Length: 329
Ligand SMILES: [Zn+2]
Image (cartoon, rainbow, N blue to C red; front, top):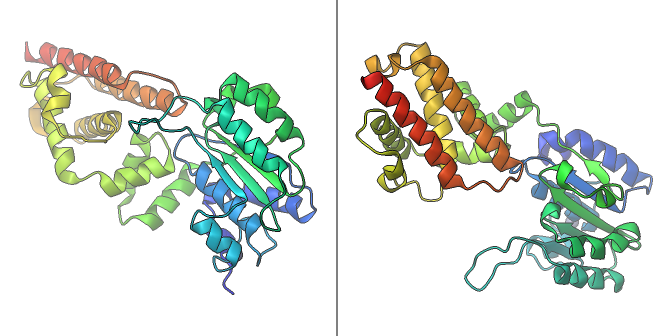
């Protein structure tokens, strides 16, 4: 039977996985793992890989699974009775709730005290541990301490600093090694883009691998052209900052990503003296400052800050407009 190998684990989790597997082989895997890393670095994918490998009947290594046995089949079709994934619920209108509540945790811990449905491991993943209410945290603590035999809790968080110490101290921390070169190599394998495009995507995504991949896959050239043209329009007083969102069709695209891309384009055009007079008149320092502002904003977004995206972006666009006004004088 073909066993999926380590190479399929996201490369930035490989070292962490080696350590976890060592513990697992000695029967000393922690009851609780806390996987912490920025948004869109694949925490959930890795957590699911661990879960499937524990449930697979054909492997004895962590993060390897056959994909063929009954347990794998149940897992992959979402029907494994001993696997639980706790996420924020959506309301009747399809909008995701702000937090994971106590009822969800009570339901989970209720399942975990019962005997497993199949003879094997039970795994529960909690998708965003920092979204849990205080009551939900408290309801989880006892289970985290004594989850029972062959039971693993995997908690995911974007920012370790926001995880309560009581939870942190009961889990083994798992942190990805998001080295730039490693991520660039991975992106290169997944797309047919050149080095400059890969770098650009990674910069614009604040180093988040899956956001960068999404950028490379979905960032159509024509859409980008329209956005760049609207931003040029703001600089030239053809488009008002508040008209930006209605003048371009960016659907579900992250406007900050598009802006980062644009300022990168402007500053690199300045450095290579492309794009004629318009960009050459701009003070380079100001362009860099705005580019930094967008990246700062993305950084805050990725660390889970609740900024109001539209207002933040409009504030940056107003500054862009003001710079335009100065050079038009
Ligand atoms: Zn299997």
